[in-house]
Image (cartoon, rainbow, N blue to C red; front, top):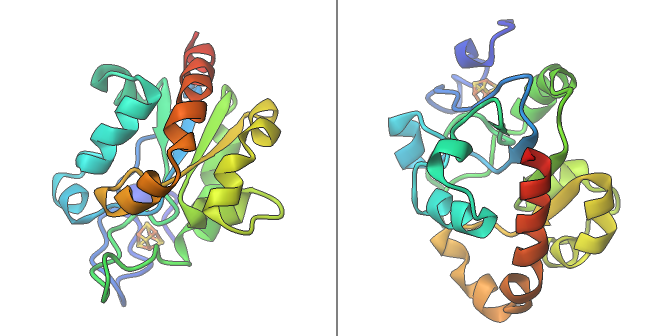
Length: 184
Ligand code: SF4
């Protein structure tokens, strides 16, 4: 087994390996998302898509900060594009996070804030997880522990955002304050 995630070919039986992550041990913020989409698979740049544009708006973060690995680490639940399913992309390959996260997380000694995007990251990292809406609503519980659950910023999630206007009304300001404090 490789000790470098970029060289990993573990799932070649199910997908075309092309691990996409951003990592430096000095990073203050960690983003754990779902898995790269097709556009990110091609570009090799994490969140180089409409999801990323919306996420940067939510965080009030410019691209130069977002793509500075000494400030922001990006390590999804599946590092490789999982391919297309019947309705949208397949879920992240379940072999990936158990293989790589335990090797990478202990290296992040300056970490102040972890953003858990979507149900797969929330299920792994939030005790008692039931569903994304409840996890996002519980932000006052998680923030003192340096963690926040976020909905997926994908345009495919517009219906959730429309049904839950409280997210942008109540959570974006504390989210942006937590981000600024983590980078200060
Ligand atoms: S999804 Fe993860 S475990 Fe599978 S090949 Fe990519 S990096 Fe390796």
